[in-house]
Image (cartoon, rainbow, N blue to C red; front, top):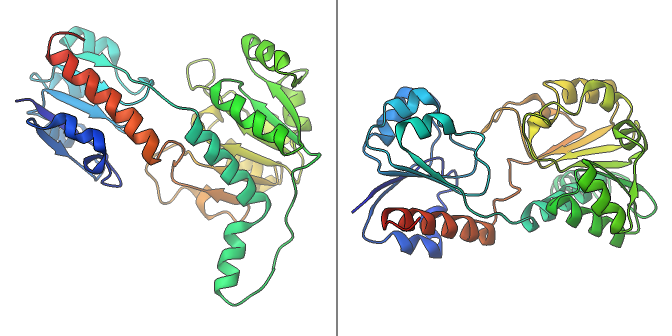
Amino acid sequence: MLNIVIPDDYQGAVQGLACFQMLQGHSVRVYQDTVRDTASLAARFQSADALVLIRERTAITADLLHQLPRLRLISQTGRGAAHIDLESCTRQGVAVTVGVGSPYAPAELTWALILSALRHIPQEVTQLRAGRWQTTLGTGLQGRTLGIFGYGKIGTLVAQVGRAFGMKVLIWGREGSRKRASADGFEIAHDQLDLFRRADVLSLHLRLNGETEGIVTADHLALMKTDSLLVNTSRAQLIAPAALLTALQRGRPGFAAVDVFEQEPTLNDPLIHMPNVLCTPHLGYVEKDSYELYFEAAFRNLLAFFEGSP
């Protein structure tokens, strides 16, 4: 019997998944709250043979690993592992497996945010419940320019929906992304500055790494229109620290819709309380089909590892 620990299950969702039955016969401890200090994490993980991590919610540092001599495997949901000190895992003999991902849920949420922000849906729902009828004037999509920064799987889906809405779609990203987008019939921006200058709605869809961290600067944001919308369902760290807050206070862009924050979970990020910002608590992948996909792969990797056939 294996001792398995699953931290940071915010919604208490994991044990209700169909794939959770794969771990039957093993001891599984699931934590719904969040702790960050190394001592608390070490106490929770002390008896674990394996950890199953929910995306990047739990950081695995060298200091933490040194206090977990029993740990043999970290099974990651999704493909990202930037939150895990892989070199320390190698030195300590802790294997790390990554799973699969899906672009559909985050692409869907991106469009939910765009439509909600431009048509003021949260505000209108609140006003209607308070007894007020039609208090805002929304903005339509047809004929406006949708900027996509990063034409991977998610960016591709977002661009296709923009085309279906009759938007002018403008793409910028790495050379491979630009070639794929051009082959799909989309216009390519002259450069990153051109993308930010021309977009009415600009959506970020880059993978976070050493090259892309802080790739959106205050100077880029200052080029945006006063009535434009910046959407970030990727990673907050793509934008230079505090640059978005300052830009919104200065009115360029005029609006933002964000699903990701520099520190998570958070209830007090200043963006949450700004009237021109629509915020959601990192819901991009938080959807039942995605969870079943992510956790089934993570559990399969875990069981295969301990059965000797990783």
